[in-house]
Length: 233
Image (spheres, helix red, strand yellow):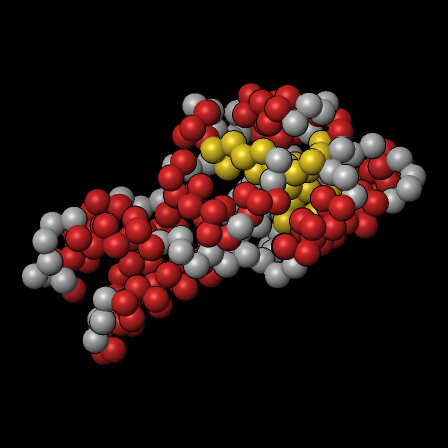
């Protein structure tokens, strides 16, 4: 019987791309960037940010020189740090699904890679932390996915065993492979993508977290459905 569900954060519960685009729109308004410059500024940010993987110091330096040459050093970086996750966007149905899962008596948690400050900000402004019994951020605990230890740490802190826990994520290796190595069952949120990774197969593929609700609320032992669904893949 499933007693707990652990989630990845970015691109699983939180739509990072949509959240970042929302931030950009609000930032350009807040900084009163001329309308004719806004498309170019937004594209420069997207290219330099690389989905959160780019060199942030280089990005701030280039953007400030080109668009805000009269500003003091560090002023643009400060705006990013203060407002980047003010308006996070979650995938549709996330709040309802989390409420339903909690109503079923399941323990819920988040295991996420990233800086403690930014990840905590996303969860605070989105209110996701209010739905969770546990939050582990890689920077804070000194471990990061796909290391199986961070998944086992989460399971231990929820006081369940690995076979009673599902990990739900969007990254094939960091989320699915890492969780499976720790002994957890896994659900991949595909968001319209195709699975193209031969090294590992998730136990379930889902479009939305709402699909978890009927899965874990079935009266029969989950093992029956798990083996039958795997057999027809």
